[in-house]
Length: 324
Image (cartoon, rainbow, N blue to C red; front, side, top):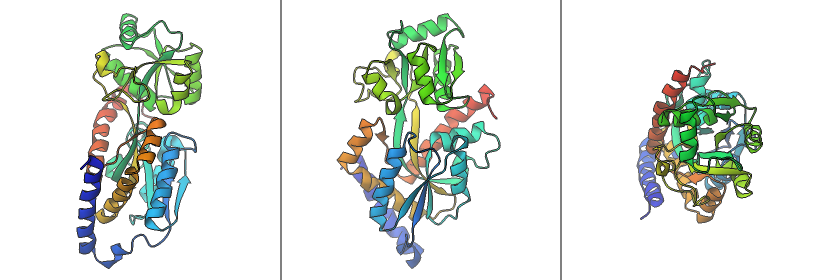
């Protein structure tokens, strides 16, 4: 039995017993249309997945499910709407590392705090970081780049989409791990940062196959390493950071959340719907082709992942003194 089937089986058993204990009302869930809030603009990483997951869950429940785009303030505007919603399973969040973990630590007036205000349901996908340099860069390997950064403290620069963004935090953690310094250069968004890399205005940056895969394939940028446990199927010739001597696994996850206090049977039911979706080999292969690794999990497993990321990123944000 593979891990996905084990997850589905364990969730199904728990759900059956909990629904029996909770009474007839839970047997009728869901009884009306549901809303899945995506706190970023259409076209953002995870957009395709949120629509596909929404369609699959609409079929599974027999009830309409509306994907509601509520972008703004690094994902905090849409996320707040879910925080304030009734914990009845009819308003859910398609959250990310950014909206749940890092933005509340960077934006001091954010009125929520990750797992303290949300119930994790399941992981959906992980977008792993890729270390990129211009196509004509003199640095041919990650080791060469690391050596140059160390030998020239603060002289090499890297692109970000602003202080506290994942593009900033991932590189800062990488720099601290190798014991080096470089200068961040902020751009309006990922397209502008990548174009600056292509033009040679910056020396390196962290991006993903999900957003830069086409540029990698066309030879406009060069990947030096991937921040994954094992080599990516899309970039089989690119080593992991661990292979280059830097033991880091870095990226951004996407997953489902509910307002705090949502009944456990409802959380388990949604996790089971997601697990059923991931049994579809075609759905999984399409996600991988887009640079998104499927990460189905139980609510308990996903809660541990979120807590681990809070422990990793929030102290770094505090030490960088980038709160706004």
